Length: 509
Ligand SMILES: Cc1ncc(COP(=O)(O)O)c(C=O)c1O
Image (tube, rainbow, N blue to C red; front, side, top):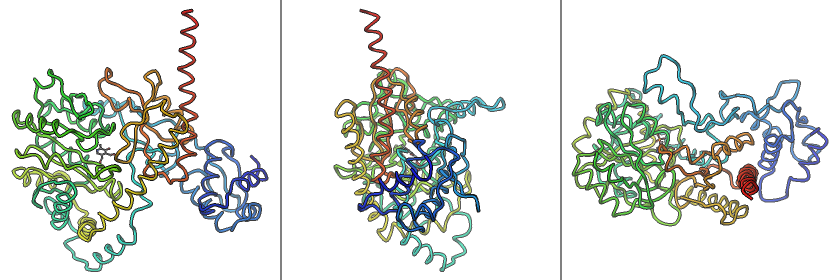
């Protein structure tokens, strides 16, 4: 597209609506780059001529070019102009910049020097090279982070300049934060604990790491739900544990008779919102699980990663709150409620374990970040966390509705939507014949990030096909256009299986 037709195209689409011109221009240019209408290497019109041709302020154009440059879509060379980047090129270093091939269900070839468990970890990696963009699952909208309040508290804490906040953390973390979390979890999640039972971590990953080190030996059996979150699954596998994938049904984890005959040392579950399918563990199943754990001396790790975001009903009380035998370790973090990069979480451990867990975290990881912990403590204590959650929950509910609308408009009831009542993502079911990994690869090539449901299963016999779509961090005006791009890929995949079916029918005729 040359500069003349680009201006025409923009003029045609820049609507006199409620959306600020800045956002419209940014979205349109990004879309044109992603869809290849503006080719890699093309020079964008200068900000001056673009502003004049399209009839908007030059500053707006400059801001949009800067934003596109930050995200890796264009690069600016002084005196030469702004050029479109080749977004099929590898640029992992740039935050938010596109990367070449899909990053799902892949893994890389492990180096020859790795241990067996190291090989198992590297051979099946789950983490994404991109951590931002439609429809990346599991992300809150970090742009909604209440920065003003945060800065006010931060300035206050730094002004007090307590030197003790700048050294290593005491075992268990900053005491006022442990106290604040204990109170918050009691009122919101019915978690019963003293402040001493709360151990501050860098997130759920670290909580599971320390729990397996303290409670399991190499070779011990651990049950995980199948499907389950790749991050925790891979952590367990690479810890040298015997990881047994256990089926889930509408009521949560459902061990078979054979499973039950071999009680595990640890059971990792997501009772409030099964990850990734979204079911809630029934009361009957909770009672059964607690009884089983008590009888066989198992530990239960309750991963409560996103249950603050329920749309139809209030969040459900925790499993920990029902536990009278002290078998449940409750873990959570601020990754979804504040922002993932904060790397701050907590575990609530049974009374008899609290001192050992606090010491182990201090010993293994030499924790710090007391200043940050003190800011979060104030943030929680003064009620800002609760009001922030209430506010973004409404935003996420709107985005979820927009995405469901977009799906229904394209597919009616043809494709099933699963697990949309809570959290930050939903699952869009696909027919078993569709290769969901390939759909994700094709979507990635069009700038859309989705993850294949099949990749979350360990047992191939249970594997279902589908796509995980995160909606919480996608601005409302981007949901429909992004889904349109994705629908193009899904349509091709559905047409592919219909075509194959037709060929088989023709052959059998
Ligand atoms: C089910 C589940 N548990 C745990 C985590 C990671 O939590 P954290 O960021 O606290 O380590 C995630 C992240 O997406 C998740 O989906």
